[in-house]
Length: 224
Image (cartoon, rainbow, N blue to C red; front, side, top):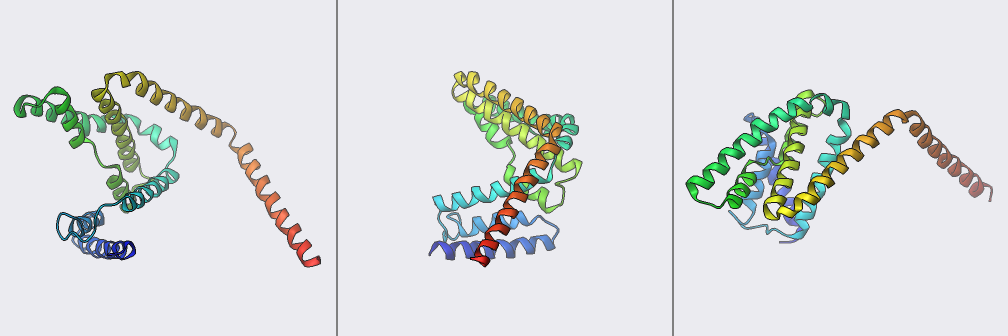
């Protein structure tokens, strides 16, 4: 089966199952996941995982998250930060603690393996959550932004914790790097807010120059 055929088959089945499940009040993303399960190696084995499919999925996820980022604002994220922290604690850290304790004392895994297993199970999928927020028109709402902020915090905590568990020396690299990144975001955000009019005027000037160059070029072509 060619790549184009595989993609078309996957898209058709995903759309059909998504529409079908929506009629029953369920999210379309469930049907899309089922389409991958049915056509993949688990059931029919029509489509095999490949680097091409991985690249397509990463690009698609990038544009979904980019769309949500464009539609959101730092003010909304900042206003809901406290709720996001509470949601992160209740939806991630508490289950993480229970799972790690269960894996360590009941299953008998080592502390590192129990912690890694708990993190793998507890971390939410940002791709699925992003799609659900977009489908339910929650992008510009407080609820949607609280959920997104919580997912971002959860992913940061999970990445740092995983790196430290695998190699404790990473704490000297990961934590300062994240702090510097957040500091840069805050500085850039404040700079853009203070100089928004100048920045808009600069881009308007560039746009006007490009438009003028096109007019001059057209006049030269017509007159030449």
